[in-house]
Amino acid sequence: MHHTGVMSDPIETAIFEKLAKADPKGVGGKSIEPADVAKELQPEQWQRMLPKVRHCALGLMRQGKLTITKKGKAIDPNAFKGVIRLRLPTEAETAAALAALPPAVSEDDDDFV
Image (cartoon, rainbow, N blue to C red):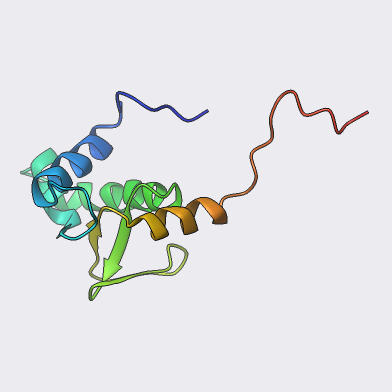
């Protein structure tokens, strides 16, 4: 079940707080570096935090809540490496990510007779 409301993941919270400052209108224009998020969370050991930030960003991209870019272009979440940036998705990017998700199975689905 996916929750809307208070985010409990500190990485997710830090990503969206940084994006809110970089892109106050929320239109998917400005991007941030994952390293900046890692440095905010663990200034002394940010390099150790970086893979966790990238992993969290990947999950958010798959949910249509974030776009990962390389050289200004959205990347394939299943095949990327190297230097990336994070930004808010455009409406089209959110729609595409949600369309790629497997269909949700509801509890009251009565196809099984």
